[in-house]
Length: 271
Image (tube, rainbow, N blue to C red):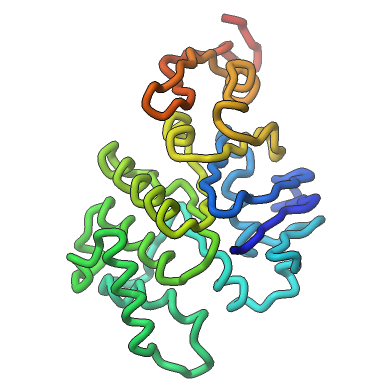
């Protein structure tokens, strides 16, 4: 397994502080979901873990080694990330796109080996994307394309999977399909998964651990049963929620919600 720890992380972008004093240890073999309002630093956290963004202060440690001291290929073998927007500069067959994920495992000028093709095929089968592996990415629906991108992460064989809003732009069927694939992969392979989601009920249902953020800071972290309270909903999301317990999962469920207070021209009015 791979242990990932964030210690005293500060991140600034364009002279604006995005993350402030972040301390977090990812739960190995579990699904952790980061939730919070827009602009609170959720995506920046994932990019910092994967070294896309460098912290101004503090460090990210993989098995007690600072990622700044690791080679890019070594980081890629431990951590893979699915970004919120995966734009392609040119059209490409599905199987060729997924093959890119094998390059961290190759030596310089080395070509893909039969074992690499077996892993690519396995990854496509795991997500149900093998049926359209010969098709071009431009021919796929949003749900199909998302399965391909998850296949790419799997074929990279990293221990830690980071998914930044993997259900964005998908209809409810394909949202659930994507999240079910992620949860099944976690159950079967015990991979550490960290997601950013906007839907609170999806975050609760599919997660072992929640990280709740506001204004670049972690407000609380823990099992959904422990941390999801109406006080947190008031403070972080500015909503009042009716919280029930799902009899199937025994987890909280946000049965109803409304604004906690309205803001008009900067003036808050209590509900």
